[in-house]
Image (cartoon, rainbow, N blue to C red):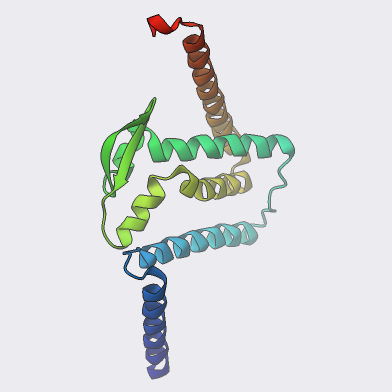
Length: 180
């Protein structure tokens, strides 16, 4: 037990030195990032372990499933990070700043310390994408039909969003400048 305590203390000291050398004067939530990374790894490992324990093979995704998963990952990540309706999920970690695009919010991370890393994660669609994609992949392992249904819904919404933007752009181009 004494050896374990010494090892833990040595790790904490090493980690503090690394954090100070990495961050310098800039306050970076390295501990929060580490906790988030560990959470992701534990979740992914847990899903892989559960699949193995239940004898489920890793899904072999064809081109169609991969395209569906890509579009769904994009839309789910954007919805979680930017939609007004999902702002209660981000509220403990962010501050509303205004609209950033049609039906999207601009929020600034407000939580200090380790919670800052969560704020960055939940307000960044690029940061959320690996988590969402991993969830969808796990869904293909344990509930492929339901996962395809959810993927189809979100892929359809992503396509509809693209068409809305294309329509608005065409409409703006066809409107004379004096009427804009």
